Image (cartoon, rainbow, N blue to C red):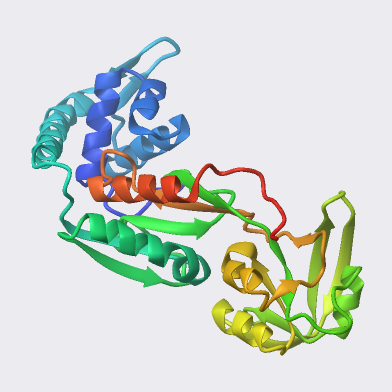
Length: 310
């Protein structure tokens, strides 16, 4: 694997190296750091590539240090001890959180679910400054100095710590009117479809029924947008059928502004049906980031199997 370009010998890497040395093997270090063994091994390999020399003398039974590894371990241990002292000093100041917390999320989740939770979280920690960015762009946590990223993904990057916060179902929703609900996905071809993104003139969709049946359908979008809230608003006005995660339309379902237009059928996106919070490896994660993720998990409840929106 080609070496990563971002700061292979920064403080985070040195602390990881020091803790790996102290643990005695990659597996134990991975457990302590909240990473996979492969992630730890890969980061050590990046450091070795940057130095041009091996750090560990690997055998089938033991993990020893090379001469270069022993010299680097002295400095890495100092970095790790300083980081630990800083964390202990921070915790000693009490439970109140302060400083800045940078958070990013996909707009559909950020605007509908996360925003009210952030308001309550900041009310509990008034000294904490929030910096929010709700975007579809894949933000690089390390390069862009972001603390927490809430993303829709079933396969989070192995180099980050992932915590599931919400499982959802994507369905078709529309204002109640004559001709709805539909019985089969094929009937969508005759509907005004409101589609997120910028697909071609025709969009291929695969639908799954709760009983296991599948159906493929081609639809011609009547309207496309990069903002799902806009499409949901248009659907509320009776302008067509919108395809959306259930968490984006819960209020509209409660007040009967929208209804399930294709009962029993769900749309499975390639990204999966799970919102996860991604953070830097545990030694580098700020107390505020860890506290926010715990708070969101507690507020949203256990991540269970998806259920139909009612």
